[in-house]
Image 1 (cartoon, rainbow, N blue to C red):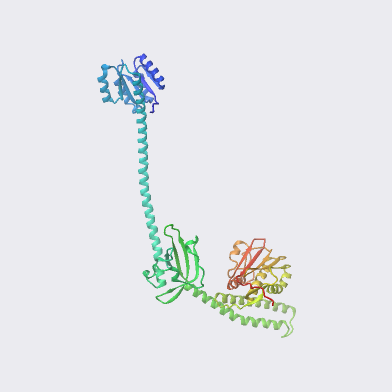
Image 2: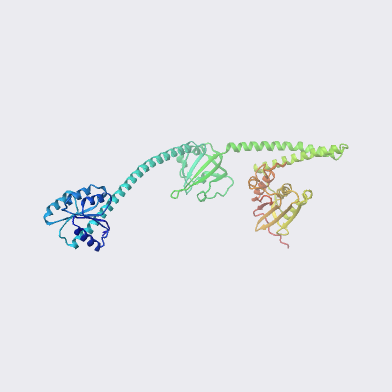
Length: 517
């Protein structure tokens, strides 16, 4: 029971107010204000809230009923509980007051102290309960208003989001339907779930004939690549060297495929975009054929010019003075450089057209590296550079195309001399890991930036963006193609001003040591 509260006691008899005030204090109800004049009490109650008002019925200036009626008009006292003290003769009027002005209770004089204290505590609790209930009602109304506002805003938000989703869906449908590339979606079992018109056109079949077919059985893996499970990848997967059959025209169409997993915990699926690259492949073939034809036709006149210049320089066609020899030597060097470029272009074409045939033999890679170093010895001396060999075994024999591997080693050593700078140290490391053979060419030259390393093994890349050299930019690209043709990999590790390390690995190329009988 919550009996805490202020009590206002009004009675024209001072003895009554003192006695009753003392009784209340003894019962722990110490917050009591007494008045012997109802008008003074009214002034106080205009601005001071309380939980209980106890008023005498018969008072000279204003009776208790009129006093309590006027108190009811104060907003601050709207929830305050009222008790009327009355004699037996005024009992009828007290009951009338209860019905008319809504007082809580009347107490007859003389009263029983225990009953009086119990009624006072009940009255205070009643006020506190009414005020708590009123506060709860206010809070409930406020919460209801907030809920209505939230519901209204939520409805508007739902309408807005629904409109955005509809527009987004319409855009996606338009893209899916009208995209020039074929779009196919398939589920976790690789069964086709949907296709656009472009995809159906590529296969030359209706959508019904393609649905629920295994996607990877509809396409042809030209190079038998190992394709990772697209459902286990976070990043999109791009596939080259694939094709598909147009069953209507009975033709093969080369395609590039982009696979992207759509993250959906319940029903994950993959979107495959098929791009017809027939035109690009034909353009590349015509371009490469043109370059191959042009370079092949250039070799004969270049060789003739070089031979003619050699005849003049060695005096076969007569004596030449020093100035003439200097000019003729420069012309011969230019023709030789052009012949080197022509040969490099032809080699690149052969690898890209798949017309290269490796002639693999068993040979000592240690001896081949020594031969390459001896061949470039003059360049090392001119550059004031040193050469060091670090062999894991005295003699490692590999099964590979000796001439092609020679080309790779000469290119790596030549690049170290040309691009490393003067007074550098070049170190060649050979080692065998199980059946794999690994060769590294390391220098302590200027090194390469990360941007230069990304494009290093591409066609016509000259290894650095800082300056342009007179090289073809095909050496490392051709080296990569040669290594890859041997089922190997080539890479670079470099840091600016700390040198570079070029390494290539040939898988299953290292042979077992010879057995002496």
